[in-house]
Image 1: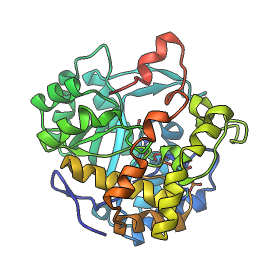
Image 2: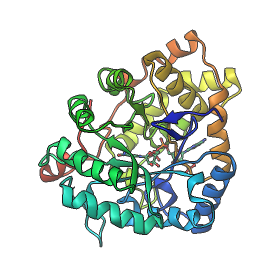
Image 3: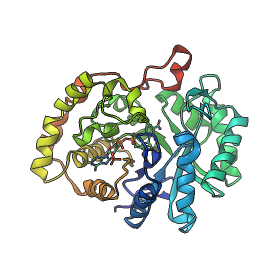
Image 4: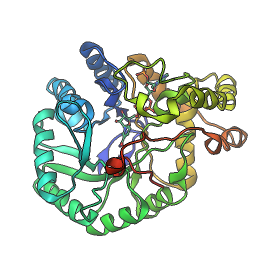
Length: 335
Ligand SMILES: NC(=O)c1ccc[n+]([C@@H]2O[C@H](COP(=O)([O-])OP(=O)(O)OC[C@H]3O[C@@H](n4cnc5c(N)ncnc54)[C@H](OP(=O)(O)O)[C@@H]3O)[C@@H](O)[C@H]2O)c1
């Protein structure tokens, strides 16, 4: 895989989203999850993304279990803090970005991951009660202490990014960006390009929809978090699946899969914007890690790009879950 550097970290052109290796998208067998990590590791996909809230810490524990079997520096480890959940039910309780919490969350992640440092530490989402500069200042102290190599920010807007970058260099921004969600291209992506900040698109496959699968709330496992997302309601899911005609046609023409077209599109869009991009698709299937890496060899022509240009504007259903008013800031609509 092509080398990509992210603030001195050698990450490769594709990472692995590890969220659905525990319960987020339904139950996963532990051995299967470890097999995915092993396969990714052996295949050179070594930029791994987790967060303290995934499976209430168990996702980090899973990665820690694997990391104990390989030299630590062979994996570039990214995790996040900031979302606070009920430890029993997992229900979102709010967001914290105050300096004391940043330190506490980092120590807890280090323990679960079984490591003495996090390569890329993200604020999962800004705390509306704490200026982002204050949170980033606390993260910078962790860098000075060697507990964190680089700082990232997730689910934020352009003004917040500029303010944060003024406090301490930001290595990466992680927001959603895919064929179905392109609002970030208007301001946040250009800002990252201008400031030399890498973009790590989350849900690059639209939480699975862009693979061509029709995913509906009626068929999802009871534990699958996608049941909360309006976009997966049957009427929206059917409408959105029908938008993928051009993606299926490109897949056929290139001898590729829809997932590969979606990833290749993202890489080529990033080239248009002149920025470093490292998508982090998630999968519970080792073979799909290879399939996703192979997408990096695909080259779409201008006609191909034009054929999918209008899709995002036609997507039906809200992107984010409906939360009670007091928790709206937990999943902000970011442009
Ligand atoms: N910062 C944030 O707020 C935030 C939010 C969401 C996600 N994330 C990060 O982004 C990562 C990826 O996002 P995501 O998991 O939400 O969505 P995604 O990567 O867009 O899609 C994952 C889904 O696609 C399927 N899939 C993956 N590769 C495939 C292939 N080649 N063929 C067919 N199906 C394929 C997976 O199913 P199978 O498992 O069955 O293969 C899974 O259901 C997460 O793991 C997490 O680390 C961050």
